[in-house]
Image (cartoon, rainbow, N blue to C red):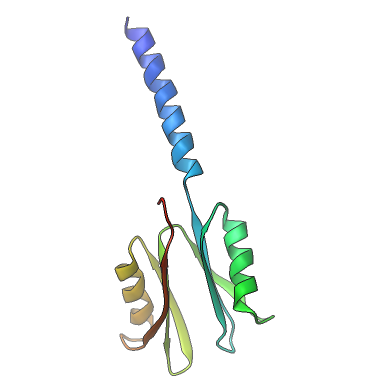
Length: 115
């Protein structure tokens, strides 16, 4: 009697793990030295999120600064851009502003769904 229960639990945990992995969404932040930026969310792969962030940034000199599964934010102060990523938008904002010594303006604040 115990063996079918253990087998059932193994099957259920495999299904749940596969479902959780399938639900992962990714975002990315791209920034150029000229001040252009792009941010993406809710992509099924890191590569797709990064590719779209570079495309939306628009400058040929844009580069990926970070990829994330939770939330991301971009802040600006005196033409300097900073970014933050965290499990919540509030923490991502705080991290971006902290990189600018606590001062600046939030330009973008996003979160992936299903994380």
